[in-house]
Amino acid sequence: MYHSSDPRAALAAAPAGTKPAATHFAGAEYAKFYETPPAENQNGARTWYARGQNFIIAYSDADEGAVLSRTNQPDEYVVLLPDPGAGAEIAWGNERKVVTGHSISFVPAGASSVTLKGAAKVVRMVTTRSEDLAKRCSNAASYATPHPNLPPFEPWPEAAGGAKIRTYSLDVAATPGRFGRIFRCSTFMVNFLEPKNGPRDPSKMSPHHHDDFEQCSLALAGTFIHHLRWPWTTDMAQWRADDHESCGSPSIAVIPPPSIHTSQAVDPKLNVLVDIFCPPRLDFSAKPGWVLNEDDYPMPTQAAAGKSAA
Image (cartoon, rainbow, N blue to C red; front, side, top):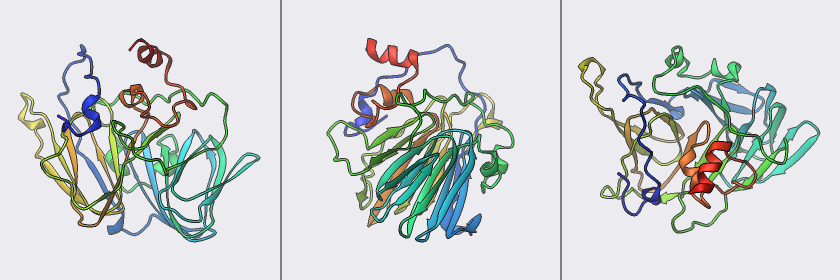
């Protein structure tokens, strides 16, 4: 139920399937980093951790010279430097790459580090295969048992040009019909939405649902109310009350399938939201021109064939 002004209104409808309708549901997860002390305070960085079923968000408030390192990273991960500024040096293997602020980088598996060139906030996104970080998440107990309606995690194909650090500027002009600024790698899809000054028009909301994947909405500035509603089933024990959760910044909301949801910016000043999916989502990838680095990362074979046929 996207508003007509929302580019997502042009997405193709999901094909009708034979999968039975969901009968059990998980609640949403909210991590308000501004309300709790960091899980870590070391090497010049204060870091908070929270997770979904497949992913971990590590939000760091870092000083100049701070080092964020991974010694045995099992798969490709994301380094987001959301604000303009001095940037960082990312090291992986024999490669050393200086990246600017207001950028997104994808770092291959193995040993790597991020050294800040100036004070900045840094968001790293890793899969829950990083068991050492999963244990540090403030909501780790929520996933002691896997949540329903989510298939096992399957990464997408590796980059066509082989393993290396790949960096992209977030300074991308808006284009009519394109939704946000979307980048993907083998493990994540990240949509850095256009910043908005002032509240969202309440007559232009876009409530919708996902059948089988979580959405992580990362608030970097401003305040958002996350509105969620779950289906009713014949078993009233499975009914859930609606959520209207107010989250300031920084925070994450993990939105479970198949809840109907929409997020409302309410701050009178700047509101910045980033939507995160793990693994990447097919419908966004199938829209020509939506994924800004689609030439670097191939789609799964069957999905690519379907896109070509369309």
